Image (cartoon, rainbow, N blue to C red; front, side, top):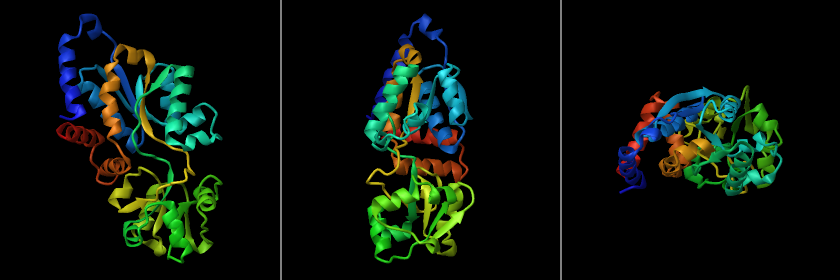
Length: 305
């Protein structure tokens, strides 16, 4: 029996034994950001808590990062999925290299938020939704490209490569220039297709359709279009970019009232890796499946495993 199934059985028993005062407790206000991944992860949190017998209030897709962040600090919402790398900006530590190490970034985010705002970080997903470089799947398979070191070797050996990206990605010292310096390659101007704006949907589409011989694209690690368009993220083995692992964050007093929240959500987020999130996001962003349905199907699949 899976950890999810075992907990569901235990939660059902707990719900039967719950006392009257506990039943009168305020519902947990579940929220999320307005983007695709926010809707999927938010639905997972909402449905998992509800199934465990925890009363919930749906405030999903509330807004952008600043809106949900201010809402949880003000006690207007109780729990939502956040990214470890964002804590660097929340606490004015963006220049520190600690945010480029997944474990250290998580521990730092958890410590700072608990000390400053009494907010607890639960277990993160094993996925990194940061700026990344991706290549067409056929190119990756034919040349054994899995990491940025592999890609640098391919480029330096004269392999045909043209990369679609925003001007910000090309010009920002922390993006393409940082990748080039760390991995020892350089893209000439005729190897770049610079698109206006920062929408990764446009860069991914250019690579997928091989527009103007483009076979690589700027992306975020868990973009929904990656799996659907057969594009592969090159692993940043040297940790050039900050790590953005998604994890539920919850107000400590709410966790004290419902300590089972941790047991409910930890195995769910622990099960999420990069390719899984790409696939789930793609079902919403590319195939138009409602996030509620995508989350329900995934949670059901965990229970069956």
